[in-house]
Amino acid sequence: MKRLSLLCLSVFLIGCQADIAENDYFPLHKGVKWHYNVFADLTDTTQTRQFSMTNLGPVALDGDYKDAPVSARLTSDGTAYYILQNEQGSYRIAKRTVVETQPRFDLKAIKILPNTEDLTIGRSWIAETRSYALHGLRSALPDPSQKAFNLTYEIVALDSRVDVPAGRFENCIKVEAQGVISLYADPRLGYQDIVVTQTEWYAPGVGLVKLVRNEPMDLEIYKGGSITFELAQFEP
Image 1: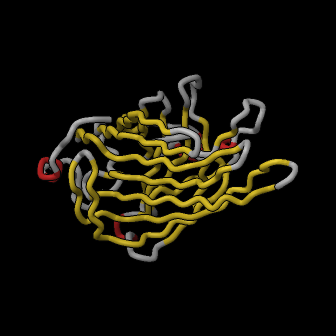
Image 2: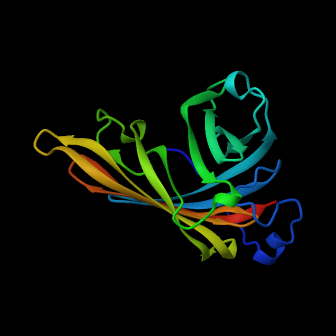
């Protein structure tokens, strides 16, 4: 599971920040922080926690990205994500967990958002992901979060309004995604196809303000559910 914490901040104050452009939906400015409340509504339990991200600023990488405009983001669980931002959009190209000393590059860059000029209704793309909510009830079972699958993303609105603990955000980009992960449920049922959906809202000058991932499953040995991230505090 990847991804993605507390206090209310008014949208007015957020809009007054001069460093982040008003049409920037994925800011990478050094020092910017996001704090999220995370609610996991799993089939067999519910969980709440906090999750934070901090921009570390530009970083220098070797190999194919030696001269590329790459920045890093550090999460509250100690994972660093490396983001390439160019004329095509924003991409995750590598990650480094707390036990790794060097970035581990993705086999293929994972698209997060198109560039500003390409943010239009109907714009779609495919990106690899992993399960957030699917889990087995026995320790010996394969971990669904280790299995990669694709989601197809599409921009469905450019003017959504979202209310989260950090305040009300207007003119958000709304992105919907859908994909299928195939999971071996048990010898009797065989493989089961789970339709995974995800909805994201990106506010101008702020970035991701809300994300909802649904992975429905309720079997004897595997369960699913939904994961929701809501912005609680933004520190530009």
